[in-house]
Image 1 (cartoon, one colour):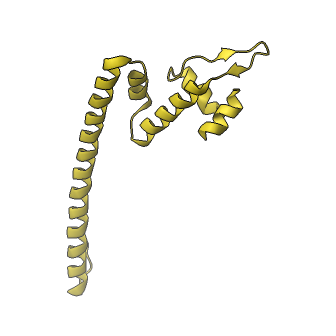
Image 2: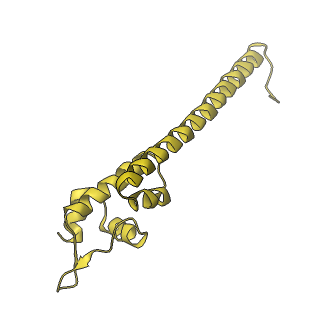
Image 3: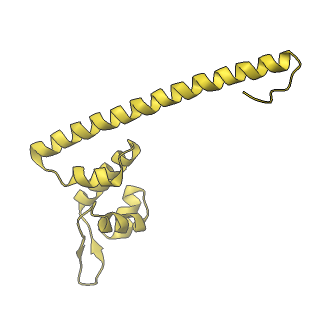
Length: 123
């Protein structure tokens, strides 16, 4: 299939496919006699994996490393990267919980200040 069809089937722009090739996320496409890029169904599967990785918050660098693995190394790499991403998400959630608590406390202090008829000048 040509790049336009692959882009349509993957739901992304053709320029994204060219970028993925340039960034080493996808192998270089074969070229037909007419010079057009030619892709097989494996290219669509690879794009789907890249999109899943991006949705899960993996960087393109991490995706490139994962996609370069094969066999047992691929399995181990996926699990290791998923564990690392889960740890990142947990840290972010903890930071958000702390920010939420701080915001709620600040809101409480501001409301109390206004209820006393004062203007909150410093918190």
